[in-house]
Image 1 (cartoon, rainbow, N blue to C red):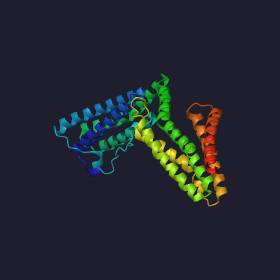
Image 2 (image 1 turned 30 degrees about the vertical axis):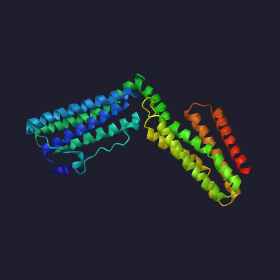
Image 3 (image 1 turned 60 degrees about the horizontal axis):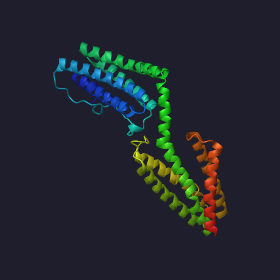
Length: 317
């Protein structure tokens, strides 16, 4: 149905359903953030309470005007109406992203109430819809005031620190473990095959097999190692995917050069790629793991060099 075709009972029914949906979304946000980000959870609890109050006022007016039966009219039933499109992985939301989403929701709600108020003919319905439009507009200010108060009390700063730690636990650590394993452990079979055969095609096949196999193995190992409930490391399968992909990427990086038919050119490019990979790993460890850069570089380079020498010794022996 079209918005312009809705009558007043349908307008109120649509508003009731929208407030219920928005309140549920805010409760979901609050639930997701309650353990790690209590200040943000408090904000969304407050916003959910506001939506619940709006819904109660709408239902009371509907009962007074049209009786006890409220027809089911949802956003998706009305063409041109803004449908809530939230990311499927709500648990991966950072607090600032959730607040941005809430601001978009409040703006859409205000626009709806303004349009509905203009369409309504009954004075009491027009008044309530107009009041709710103004209240939705104030919600953004209220949320901003709460944010400023929490920031002044240091709560937001604490949340930012926690968010960084969780990002490291849930994404950086699995990605770094995969990249290190893929970049370092595959050096031995790839370069052993290269020195043993001097054949770029065969070396590429060995490298591709080693990279894909290592990616699958590391992905499953990461996913099965910790369910994340106690450690706070997040969804196991997401960590496994991140770790597996980065492992495969780390090995494929110095495998691709062997697509060149010239063996010496391919070997030279592969060595350069390995140096770049080890440099990137050192940067990540310095940036996110609080490891001094020189120490991180030394550790990674020594490990990579030992594995490379093992591959050279086995392949050339």
